[in-house]
Length: 197
Image (cartoon, rainbow, N blue to C red; front, side, top):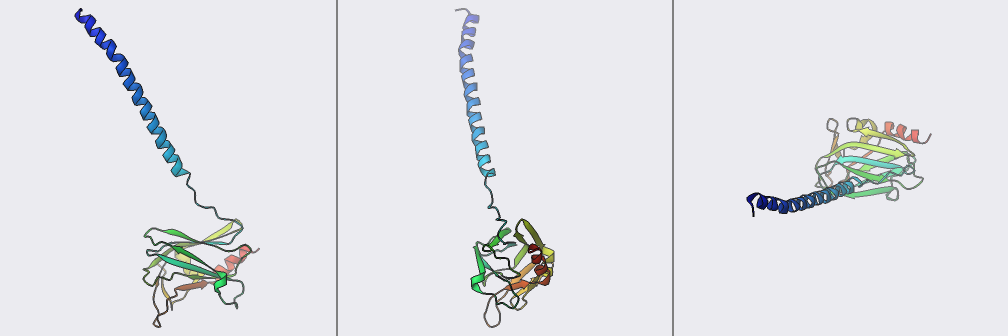
């Protein structure tokens, strides 16, 4: 066989092999990309639960480092006592990242006064409250970190409030009790009344 003919036959044999390899690579790459896009699509479709506009909802965004349970009491008249039957718990895992701690009041509950109990864990470290948001009937307002004491009255017998940081440091009282709490201030009361108009 002539040298050039031999060379051409080898080239002709390699071309289909090269083309097959190229097509296989393209096919595998496109499948991989498709799987990656599908994975990304799955991540994007994860949604947070929607707030029901018809229910009075309180969302505390805070950094609470140790496992704990917050409680919110609600009542209509100032003279009424805060009772367990009109309260909600939210048990959650501690984290050094901010998290939403949400309370959804029963249907038709539109209170005038609230009491926030910031935990039952006596080993809890300082809690940073980033915001407290209240939603009702499509309306909402947010109490920001630097204005907490304008809306909420902190009980200095059960916790120490740091205005600059917007944080609370719960402590065990001399009698051994532990109940870090705060109450509706006049400004918060006034804001809630706007929902009733």
